[in-house]
Length: 427
Image (cartoon, rainbow, N blue to C red; front, side, top):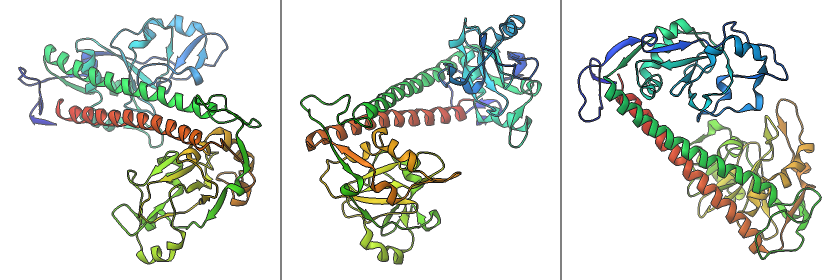
């Protein structure tokens, strides 16, 4: 976005004048990393063959699915694979436009996939050029040269010929450093969020008993003794659900809210606070009046009974319903605890491997998996008899979720700031 020809909307104080324009090849070396344009055969011992999908946003390589190729490929084309500070990868096949800083790969003997181009800034500040290639202005040029429908592709020569606009070197550095700081902040919150998510995953395994055991590996100080074990059917009563589709729901308003199984699987966590989460309304008021006898209460559990994978059985515990009317919708099983459980305990327990692994052998179907009310009745539910221990477990996981959410909110905010600046600080 510009105020005038080759002048951005926002500039740092003290800078003025029009920006210059050159082709990308005029300001950077663009390397096609693999001359054959075919992935080499894999071997047991050799060097990693890195695709852009193998590199995280922070520049670290995830070796889980990386192909290992013969060492001679690296030795014969080592100049193509030599990475220096400021170099970055640009996705040009499938992940067209994805940009990854390669500075963490300096001194590593990696080979790289031809699905990316390696960009080595020459006359421009590396941070400025990397940011510029992420702007909508540059993406529009890329889109004009991209071919393919299901698998997008950008030719290396077409990429080299695309225009880049830039100011004098001091302004480049100011802009590049600004975006580097934004990226560092985003990366910081992503790392914190990732660590907390890993802690949560580990604790979900260790704070509930494994199959066949009657006590967890880790528990809070002051609690001991074996946990109670009962069948699901003796712990819960069924609550009727409805079969309203997405087309019969809206986010504008209505007399009642409806929980759709897709939201249980993807959108909501282990607990659902009806005061803070966005839940769709039922559009037809007449339908609401017919469903009132099936209204849900705090502590009720809604289970997704269908999915495309073994996430079938993912569930939520309802919190803070208050005076709201809330119903359980399409492809769900709603149950109400008969026994007294501390708030939030069931939401986390029923989603843990300790319980959910029992459902794996009960799932039916091929393309779409499902589980029935009848099948669930005979699964086992374990819990500490002390309600204070139940409450401590639920509150611990809720606090973890709150911290994870805080970092996600910061990530979203910073990415929004970055996107706005990419529009207004470049031409």
